[in-house]
Length: 396
Image 1 (cartoon, rainbow, N blue to C red):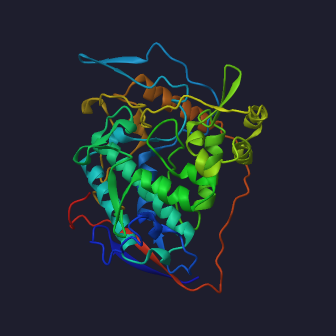
Image 2: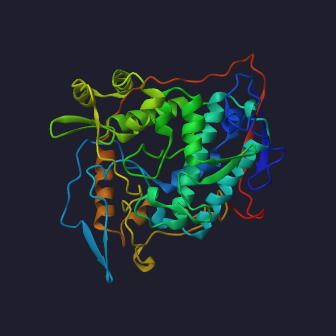
Image 3: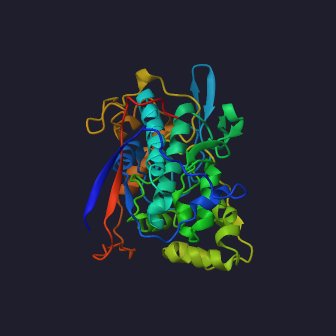
């Protein structure tokens, strides 16, 4: 299929924003209509950022973390604590400790540019998968940016947006086609409402250790379903997803919260979903099939390398290099996992040690995933690219 590239500047103003179709249902405008797709979005800038910002920890080995004698750290006259969760060494992390003001500015420009890109054309000019990838990338970019602005923070759920006097996930932080949206609006009123597959659960990164992992690549319209399946497999087979505590099966709180949307035939529909992705060990736990599965204790601490440490390491102790990324200008640092070593807490060093051990003994697996192929009879589509533009306006 011939694809024409239509570049869009990151921070240009949205043209022709569309009003909601009904005041009583402002989210109806985002129903994914079955029309011929005319556009795709190139999410390469977001992938380039995530490749540098995400610290990959490897697949869970189902070994619970234990409380150690180094759980507390003295920093000057202040005592700080990290997470005590049994899941604190699972899941990829964002290396917030390496972020500087340029990175925060870039994140603001990117999230605004992604909204502007969507606002330049009709919403139904995108396929369902393209729309889904847009919502997931926008949601995750906003969460990362808002955490970065206040980092270090122990728990993202405690972040308040002061000018709205609202918590992070309730504040109206984005605007698409004339509709102001909160993160919860995107999740519940758009994605959960219009995409009926429980796989979408694994596309939302809330910034907490206990949730699905942040992937080191952006979601793409032609691969989003396969990407969600891969993230689902990691989460379901981790202790965060399915655990056994005190001889009894536990499931993640995310499944309990999503019960009204995807698991109305509870718990049969939940077990059917989990069984799709369960490996042998997880399948043995699921075989218990309790009539009323209970949720494990959710790990709310920030999914950074310090598990929500509330004290920044002194810059003189942190050897993480801050260098301009030559391929994307001076808007972020060229992040490096080598910065994990110096000036950080025992927990960060232990996370690095366990992650490297898991990755070194990783075994190969073969998965059958959906593969999207080109239809030679389909109409041509245009790819909208989100390009950095550091001269236009202030970032949100």
